[in-house]
Amino acid sequence: MTELQDSYDVLIAGGGPAGASAAIHLAQDGARVLLVEQKRFPREKLCGEFISPECINHFRRLGVLEQMICAGGAQLTETVFYSERGRKVSVPSVWFNEEQMGAALGLSRAEMDARLLERARRAGAHVLEDTHAHDLITEKGIVRGVRLKESNSRVLDARSLITIDATGRACALVRHIKDETGASSFRPAPNKRRASLVAFKTHLSDTRAESGHCEIYFYRGGYGGLSAVENGLSNLCFIARARDVRECGSDPLRVMREIVCSNERARHTLAQARAASAWLSVSLEGFGRRRVVPARGLLTVGDAASFIDPFTGSGMLMALESGELAARAIARRLAELRHGEGFDSLAREYRALYEARFNRRLRISALLRRAAFVPGLAATAISLFATSDRLRRRLAQATRNNAKGRMRRI
Ligand SMILES: Cc1cc2nc3c(=O)[nH]c(=O)nc-3n(C[C@H](O)[C@H](O)[C@H](O)COP(=O)(O)OP(=O)(O)OC[C@H]3O[C@@H](n4cnc5c(N)ncnc54)[C@H](O)[C@@H]3O)c2cc1C
Image (tube, rainbow, N blue to C red; front, side, top):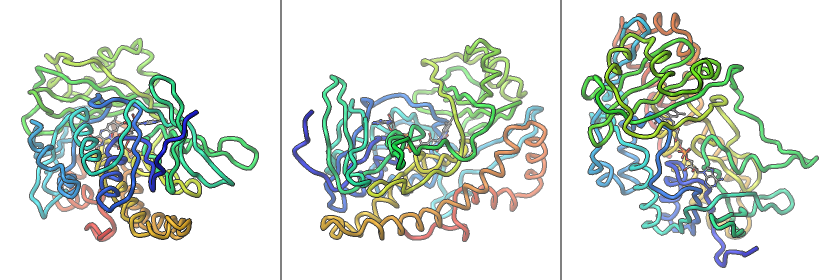
């Protein structure tokens, strides 16, 4: 076993938007940061690839706005929700970011994530790709760093004052926290659905989606989204019940044809569509909150902290926001932390900031989730929300903002 020579202020496991956001902000604030990512970027990632307009403000603060705009993505000015029988309701992207009058961006995760990771490197973070965060290093119950495994199986110990789990829904570090009996104290997300779900994604050519629209289709047991990305392709990403997937022989194309296309609008837009990339799939265990300070010395950000329902199109926004929130809280206490003090105040502050920022939108998304998986309820909700722009706008904003409907300063 080798010990990394440098010791770091902050070690971040996971180079998705949450980890990269935290790394960039911390490095800009003068912290010594190590970011480890198990894959080599660019890599494909299962996601709807709808980048909500508020992310533009984050990209600007992160110093990557220019790179994102130049990446060749699509401008998405509306999200249109379709019931199984073709009723629809539309949410203009501008409602999410009224100050900027912005459109959402359709851009592959391969492109977006690679740009963020490269920016973290340029900001001064030490970035290791092809490196798996394998276990926690703990002393007297306090997390002191992470045991890493490189792709050549070399094991390294990396030490840090604070560790951040940014490994997404995998919660790869939190899983290693042990209780007093030595057993793993990791619990699945609180809102675990009894019937587990499977998500699929591919890039398609020859769809008939309306230009500038992100289309969301509801059907029995799930929903899917179609929107343009770079290179004239569309991203199709959908969720279906595991048992329905098994009935289709776990063949994504059959699931698309037999389940997603039970939605009238999807049947029309996907009639001639052809897969232009490999299908990705992943099983989903549940949605909602986890612990943001699961152990002394360890914080969580992004999906490792909470997984918001994909139909809100706001998971990446929450990842960028929570990465920034954690980074700012750590940076404010860096001097104390370097003297071995200040973790408890940091934990209290981060927990409070996190709850103030995200609790309301997570609650509202959980309520909407009930309708999302039941076609009859989804159709009723679509008819109801179609009657009032005001109601729709308020609901759309409530899936993102805090109680006052506006962002508080971090
Ligand atoms: C079906 C579906 C559709 C979605 N559609 C949208 C959408 O359209 N818009 C939107 O905003 N959000 C969407 N989301 C949510 C969005 O994908 C997530 O919220 C976002 O990716 C969270 O970012 P993150 O950085 O927390 O995690 P991730 O993006 O998952 O990144 C985690 C990173 O950690 C790495 N990692 C994992 N384990 C380890 C380890 N042990 N060691 C080192 N590295 C590790 C992974 O390789 C990965 O790169 C969707 C989610 C799903 C499931």
